[in-house]
Length: 120
Image (cartoon, rainbow, N blue to C red):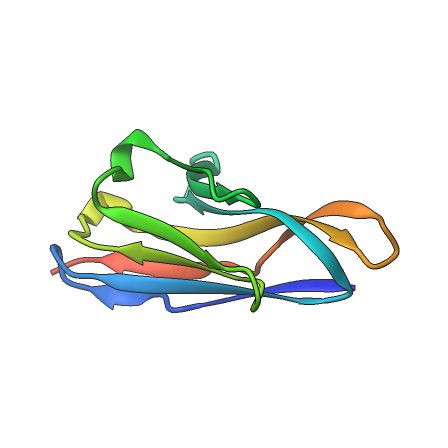
């Protein structure tokens, strides 16, 4: 019923920038929040940034001042602008969203993940 599709990952030099996109589609009534998580091999999934329907934003301490999450409500799309990237930002980045469908059912949905590699 609902799909999240991510794009924008890739290989970038340290200090470089990337912009990730996450588009939600399907039987959407309301998007409650959209968030970005990341995971490296052998480690837990960790929250990077989150924006709720009211526009309240929170960031992980490790990305504050470097990453910016934003949202286009009309397009049900979230973005993660990543600047001053460091090798430790290398991970698979996942988009997540809690969405109420047209059937008034609420659920949390995940994208397929996009690889971000920061390396010289």
